[in-house]
Image (tube, rainbow, N blue to C red; front, side, top):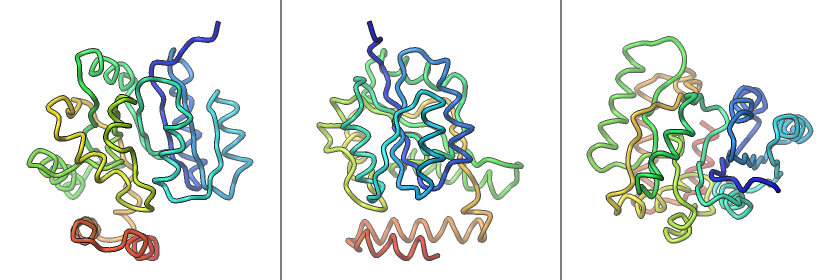
Length: 229
């Protein structure tokens, strides 16, 4: 009899074959975990091959990230979801920590933000800023590896079909509960976006994009500016 998974890991992918090759093997020894990669990559063969060799399901869907995340959730068969970026670096204890959180009655949560690569004062400052933002009412974004029960995901409306800020309203809804918590583990975030530009300038621009979205700016227009940048 096929084992029913207790956790569905949903990974949106966009030309991330290299990072995905490092991430997927970490789930090979995890029992009760299914992995669903939803890719809009033009390198279909490489991504599909990686998924096949690591026991992951692969779906090719050339749509905005929010649509791909919703599709992954639709295909998931576990009662709990973990949304993870393809270029993330996770702890060996991450799955265990998530399941312990669910067992304790939490509806979901997120991880501490940590930039990968050599340590520096600038990276520590950005990590501290993200921690303070989340501590004082700001929302954790997708790069903090959000996890949630399938029931609460549906109740909160899921991801919006947007190219940016697709998790904004979902997380706002989840944060109304006192059972949505930060885990005492970090998830490594690729620092390439910060390293291409000034660390501080990139962070300030991200905050401006967030403010513009909150004030009603078009997500599609913001996405065009963001990726052009």
